[in-house]
Structures are given as structure tokens and as C-alpha cells.
Image (cartoon, rainbow over all chains, first blue to last red; front, side):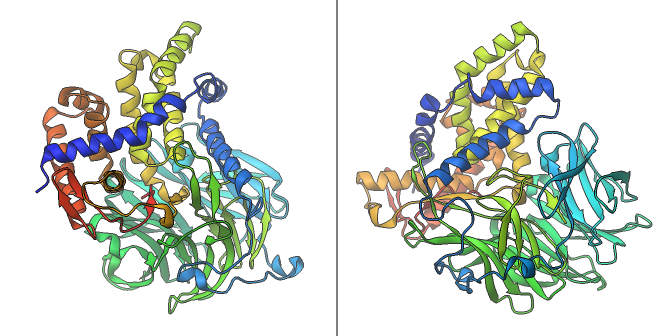
Length: 402
Length: 188
């Protein structure tokens, strides 16, 4: 039997092995930290410095990624199960962008603002000031699907409030108004929002108790009336998506022993009851060596998933280790890999090696034809054709919608 | 922040920044998130320096632990980065030898990542920073009893995870584990 003394001695040794080298070499007070302080003096709601640091590391990764080149690349068959779906050859550009939304909206992590950008070029058409106290990293944005309406969940400590952004036809102006939906109480956060087809309801993925509990709420945008689904299982819904006016998808991130329930679930919002996990699981979070980081339903009967390889096989130069996959929402079977990512070699202090960098699926249009993704670079993925766009640093987090 | 305060703040960063980064690394599990956490914690501490200056190491660690909880809330919007060790180059774990010790520690760190943030923070503060129960309680803003119960529960969970691990073989020096997965720093 392992005693507490044995365990704490090994634990201390493990901590020292891991962290001591960093304490000696990694911090340069004359560098990144003072830059952050100066930035704070200019802007009360600073987020630029952390994002810049992430970007710097990503740039290092990219610089030594000899196999994949500077951006997402289509390549060889990946090792996992989900990623074995055929990597598609994207259609010509004109065909790929057919039906593409005209605008996308991003939350600026450096200041409290929502930026309306042209989908074709990423150029900022207008910027809308948001309440000064919001935390952009904990805020969400979702498109109404008509190309001009966007719902926002803004984390204004200690509450999260809901707003509507209406963009003019040319995108050069936008107006922010508060929605009828009640603010989330302190301690609850919106991990994702989605506007129903037709624009009458807002689905909210709610996280409680630091991720130990979660709920999904559907709010009428006309009356503010809300219906809530919960579960006693530990975990939280990491995002929501609509398959049609009735069926709602949510990505359940189970905690502890409930991790086996993780994955993309479908909820019938017209059915009686309030049990969140009473519906059908469309896609398990772990399939073979592949882990689904996030997935959402589309109105075309498919699911779009950001997948990363998490298995034990050898990974090296040229190995496809992640990507964006389209699956059947009915069977959960992969249909095609829209974007494939390669392993990258990085000189992370003390941890040199090959890295798997997962893609972030930031947004999808209703049918799942046009996606906003953040992989090696941020950009749009139109039917498998990737185009880099401004609005987010490489490998950085982003809240975006179209 | 006035000039004198700024100098004081930067002196603190110079003296404790490295330790803070190590603390964040053990809490977050990867260098990228740790750097992000430290920067944000320092920015927030700088903005509240009149309060933070009373005990900057404790203040910044308190902020950092709270940020770590926040970051979990925003997990969907962060990307995972996983270091994959080359399986062919990893030594095979044999109870009692040096390779086993290395793998034991990797397994321990992986198991720590599965603990709740508060429990992980208690372990790091007590067994890496060598803080007393009272100091740990002060940093985390809880009672000494809570620190004790967090420690007890965390060790119990760690022991259970290690003993349940595939291929676990117990030795007096600790469990010698054949790594079920050759991956370090899973960001979950």
C-alpha cells in the first residue's frame, strides 16, 4: 500500500522535475510583463499581452513545422478512426464560396468591442463598443442566420447579459440592444449560444460551479420566457447548435466519472421533461485514438467536428494529427475530412517534441458549408477550401460568428 | 500605477515571476497556458497594487488560481496542445529502476491534471512551494481545515488513479507504471 509519505515525496519530486527548470529560465521581467502593464495603462480591459504570447509560441511552432508549411494543409491519411474519413479535394474557389455569409463578427480580446468584418477579405467594416466591464474571453457571439443579426452573451462580472447586434446591409454600422433574456446569475457562465432557425429563440449552454454542473436553457426572444434542462451528472455543455427549429445539439463535457458521457448530444426541445442527457448522443467524444474537441449539428443533417489525434502511435513529420471532419448526424459516421493538420515540432523549454495542435471550430453557417476555424491560422473553411483571414492570432482563442 | 508603485511591482515580478510561472505550469499543465495565466494574473495584480503589495506572492497566486478556474469555464474557446513523446524512445517501466521513476512522475503529473483546480492548487502550494497549511489557506482564501480536507481527498484520488492505472506495479518507492498512453500534458 502506498503511504501518504511515499505519495507526497514522489509528488514533490515530480513537481520539481517539471517546474524548477521553468523558474530559472523562462521569465524575463523586462520583456512581456512590462509590455502588458504598459498596455493596461492605455486600455483598462487588457487582453492583448496574453494573446500575443500565445501567438509568439504558435509562431515558433510554425517556424519549425517543416512538413506542413505555414498554414493548414491537406495531406496523408491520419492515424485515428474519425480522421480516416477521406481528406477531400476542395472545389474551385468560386464554387467553394457560393452562399457564403457576407459578414462575420469577432469579439476583440484586446478591448471591449465587437468587430464586423467582410467575409471575403476580413477587413473591418465597423466596430461596436461593448460595455467596458465585460470579459471578452468569457463572452460569446452567435449568428441569427440572416446575415445581419447576431446574439451576444457578455460576461459583465458577476453576471452574463444578453444583447442583440443588428448590422446594416453594407456592414458599415451596427446597433447593440439588450435582449429580453434574463441575465445569468453570479457563478453561471454562457459557454455557447445559438439562435434558432427563424430567430425566435436563443439556446444557451450554461456552466455552473466551475464546470462541475451545467444546463441548457432555451429563451424566447419575444417574451424572455425560458425553459431549462439540467442533469445531476458532473460536467457542462460546451456549446449549442440547432439542427432545426426543434432539435438542439449540445456538446457535453463530462467531468470525473461522467467523462464517458462526453460528446455531441441531441435534445428534442418540444418533448416533455427537463433531463438534459435524455436524448440521443450523436457522437462520442473519444473514438479510438481520436478525441472530438468540439462538434455541432447543422441543418443539413450533418455534424461538424474538430478532432485531434490522442492515441499512442508514433507521430512525426508529416503525420496528420487533427482536423475538421464532417459526419452524419444520424449515424455518427465520418463522411469526409474538410481540413487536415500535421504534427508540428516545437522547442518548448524542457518539452521539445512533436505537438498536436487542435483546431478550434469557431462558427458554422446553418448548413455547415462555411466554417470559421482557428488552426495553424484563423480563417474560413468553405466546403473544404481554407482561406486565411485576419481577426485572430494563430492558434489563439476566438469568439466569432457568421 | 504611479512610478514608485511600478518600480515596486516590477521588482516583485523580477523576484517571484519565475516561481509564479512554475506554479502556473503545475496548475495549467502546459507552458502556453501557464504563461497566459501568469500574465493575466500579474496584470490584474498591477491594477490592484495597493491591495496586492501587502503580500504580492499570495495575492498573485490567489488571482492565478481563480483565473485557472475561469479558464476551465472557457475551455471550448481554447485550443489544446499536446506533446507527444516518441514511443520508440521512451524507456520501458521497470519497478525500482530510474526509468520507472521518471515514468512514475509523468503518471503522477497526468493524474494531478484530473484533480479539481482547488485540490491541485493545494498540492502545488504545499509540496512544491513547501507552504504550511496556514500559508496555503491564506493564499487560497479558505480555512486550514479546508486545506487539510483538500489534501486528504487529492491524495486519496491520486492513489486510486495510480493503483487503477493499467500495468501498475506497486513498489515501496511508489507505483511503477507502464504508461498507458505516451502522451504528456493532456490539457483537460
